[in-house]
Amino acid sequence: MHKQAKIYVAGHKGLVGSAIVRCLQKNGYGNLVLRTSKELDLRRQAEVEQFFDMEHPEYVFLAAAKVGGILANSTSPAEFIYDNLMIETNIIHAAYQYMVKKLLFLGSSCIYPRMAVQPIKEEYLLSDYLETTNEAYAIAKITGIELCKFYRRQYACDFISAMPTNLYGINDNFDLQTSHVLPALIRKFHEAKVNHAPHVTLWGTGTPLREFMYVDDLADALLHLMLHYSDELHVNVGTGEDLSISQVAQIVKDVVGYKGEIQYDTSKPDGTPRKLLDVSLLNRTGYHYTTSLRKGIELVYEWYLQQNK
Ligand code: GFB
Image 1 (tube, rainbow, N blue to C red):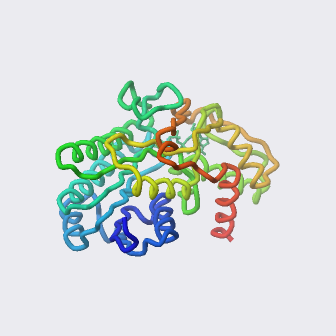
Image 2 (cartoon, helix red, strand yellow):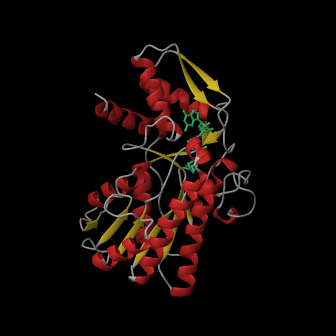
């Protein structure tokens, strides 16, 4: 991918898309094609084909998606499956029609079976039942992986798929109903500190284990895969390390400097007990993550304070 290549980052305003843009610009790729969802509704095939016909991007990072935490996924399954199926199908098919040189599709670690053997290898996909709280999103993302695989097989398209673990970073979603856990913890502990609240209430039991990757490390890994990986097997992207929700809550509590108590609302779902990714395939391609969880949380909290002065 030469430095003047025309690169389309679908979903460039989101947590992952904006990190990909930062990473591309940091590495000298300046010829980026970007569209907001108001400028281009990726669920409408005619609009997507018109866009590809006009712009003819050479490379595509498919980071556009409808995403959310455990509550959003479990309360809006029809939106999650419809929006994500339409977005990925339209972009992948248009990339084939308009002869995109290479496309990278982004899924999620929730594609794997709820009780998969840990750490989870890429080959465990579709080997057992999915986690019910996010099966709609998971089925849509599994379909994206299969689309890339079959377009490679039938049309020789160089379309690859990456499956990131739980992500966090600047420009995340901090809405307490729809966000993922880490931004929710940062906001909850910050607001409790500012308001001198005696306790913070978290969801579930605090016992599930999660793996967290700083989004700028993910973006580096995605550029690395775009440059160096070309095969039909999707690639897990993560740190290979996990901890409990209670443990990560303690780190956030300490970084924020909150001194009160932590309580758990067990009426809220825990979700899958664990989803640690086996990242040996990624590591064999030569990529290793660099930002520790504590450092990443410190960077995000610093950014959060700037945004909420
Ligand atoms: O990050 P999260 O919403 O999604 O929740 P998943 C992770 C764990 O944190 C769950 C607990 O056990 C939650 O119960 N948790 C505790 C909280 N307090 C909170 C809180 O205030 N907010 C949130 N959101 N969680 C998602 C999938 O699963 O993982 C998505 O639903 C996607 O589709 C994403 O795959 C990567 O990690 O459980």
